[in-house]
Amino acid sequence: MSEFAAAFDTTSKLLARRGMATASILWKLKRLFNVGSERELKRAIRKINMLAEDIIRQRRRLGFTSGHDLLSRFMCLVDDDDKFLRDIVISFLLAGRDTVASGLTSFFLLLSQNPYTVAAMRDEIAGVIKDGNEDAVNYEQLKEMHYVHAVLYESLRLFPPVQFDSKFCLEDDVLPDGTFVSKNTRVTYHPYAMGRMESIWGPDWGAFKPERWLRGGLFTPANLFNYPVFQGGQRVCLGKELALEEMKAVVVSVVLKFDVEVLQGALPLKFVPGLTATINGGLSARVSRRS
Ligand code: HEM
Image (cartoon, rainbow, N blue to C red):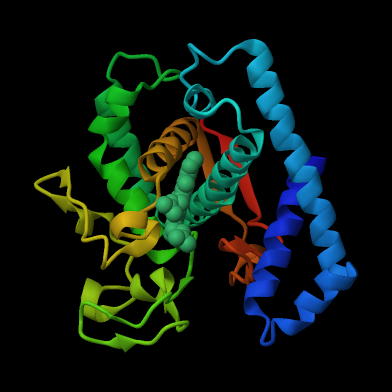
């Protein structure tokens, strides 16, 4: 694992621990005296900052005015505030790295348990690619793959990468259903639990059923407030479409060429407490090239 990946994992783990602490005074004292986990966290954050600053320096050296990547676009808007740019780089890495990895891990777990779904995906992919190049599936082709999209949504329903998320109320407020929430109250929404509620998904909520997302063969999205995997409203995930396309591109390439079999020893799953759902010890799988 690279030094950067290790620093990222440490930061994610220690920040999650902060969030779960029953009394925040403990970590605040450690931070004040710069000892223990807070010292470790500070070191990891320093490493991440250095890497982000390096990425910005490189982009500036190579030129960014005609670049189409996210950082170049941000740099065209704000090029004189390196701290702002550094925080943007870290936000996007934090938001996009472990979430996508977590989503893909549970996706392949579910596929390995549902061979019919794999066959149906391969049929759809073959139909869309036809005589095209298997090694270069393009954006337009990905958009035509409604069944693959449905499989992704279904796997994210059962295993959302952000399992729960909290907000703190700045002022006394009333939720749309009339619930009063007083200032400073912590409100948590729980995509993992919501993805398994009979009142939302019906009696077959526990079944892995991509077809529930299709109407007449076309993908039909759910109400984001019933399916807050990417959150909803004004602070909906900014990378939602990017994440879905990225995941779709990966799964299409892998499913076309490989069989992925999750090893029995990998089950039952155990998640590690963290900002995103990570399987303890990773997911052991055998990957073999299709003949
Ligand atoms: C499967 C992958 C992903 C999932 C499940 C996901 C989920 C979420 C969720 C639940 C939030 C709300 C967090 C909060 O308010 O506390 C969020 C916010 C955000 N996500 Fe994602 N995300 C994913 C991938 C990405 C990617 C790839 C990017 C960008 C490269 C990204 C960028 C962001 C940003 C910038 C925010 C903050 C939006 C704001 O506060 O206005 N996400 N995401």
